[in-house]
View 1 (cartoon, rainbow, N blue to C red):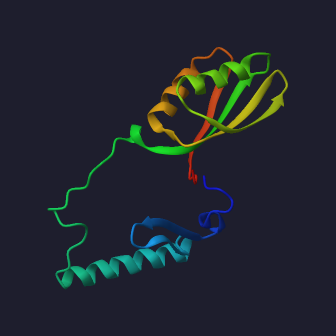
View 2: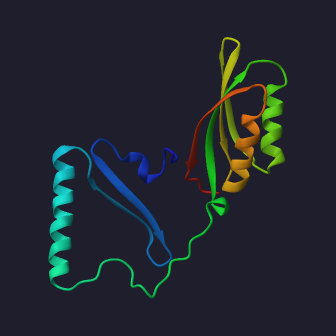
Length: 160
């Protein structure tokens, strides 16, 4: 998910975009058609032609083999999260759920609750947190008696 004011939020229909940020370049967004019937076929065909032409010229593809990439463990990723829970709607449940977030050091940025009879849907957006802490939070939430379902869990691009 991205905030409504992020450039990627304006991408619609058969358009795709890639948003990158570099030390020297700053923020860049590449935007164009890329999904659905003819646009996809055209893009794939163009890429194949470029690859064939470059191979014929002896051009190498990808990074040189002497430049190893440093891979960071996913547990160290830091981002905000969107989380939807379905819980039993009774006193103390929200406090128990919030306590799990707090126990793992995951701060809640916003929360909305919608009643669904004897259950409730609670939507959380967190502040930036470590992926490992969020996974531990999710594991503990799944074991709470009052939590019926951990629904969508999405990483959110956040400016914090």
